[in-house]
Length: 126
Image (spheres, one colour):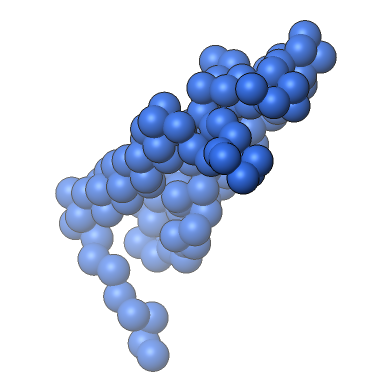
């Protein structure tokens, strides 16, 4: 295994700090891009939202949780192939699939909540 992939205490601390920052940023993005538009929609019956913001917030929380578990850079998520380039391991592909599942579940919950409240999406009059 390549020495760059073996974690040190400093790398583990940086990963934990990065995980905490990702969780905080994801929580803030989720609030501003998902929860506030719903509150505005309830109050005024009209809102503008950005779908990328709705998806990226929970994804940042997921990546932050992965970083806090210490699974980045320690040979469990990625390894070096025969040519010396890092590639994903089986656990790495599971982490990618988990990220895609977070995005899918976020979209299902977002649109499900909007439709359960009786709101329908419009094209904005274009």
